[in-house]
Amino acid sequence: MLDKYWYSNNKKILNYLLSPISLIFKVAMQINKSKKQKNSYTSKLPIIVVGNISVGGTGKTPIVLNIANFLHSQGNHPAIITRGYGGKSDIYPLVISDKNNPMQTGDEPFMMFNELKALNIPICVGSKRIESVKYLEKNHPQVNVII
Image (cartoon, rainbow, N blue to C red):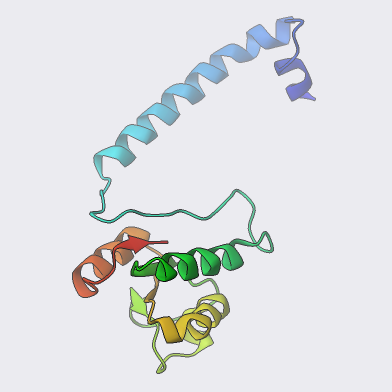
């Protein structure tokens, strides 16, 4: 109901009453953004982000596989970073190998590993993406693009 009033062309008293809340929210978001930028990390490698605001069933995994296959076919050496939803491991970041199983890596990362195994594309699982990027940069020097 509030959104109807907030976005209407006909400004009503409620719009003016809610304006201070908007200003407070804007300032809070700018402070949050500044903190994140202060602690940010810039990778030496190009990163392709595949995602959206929806979770589950939106086709991100097939897109990642297609991008990885395409980049490899063009002579690149891609790597994939994923959070590994559903998996539990004692070590993160974890680059998937034949020694792992879906319980450790999550089912989708393990499926991607099996799909791309012949291409030797590293798939790194970890909840902290920046740590995964740093790990790949340090331990997989052949990688020249991260998905």
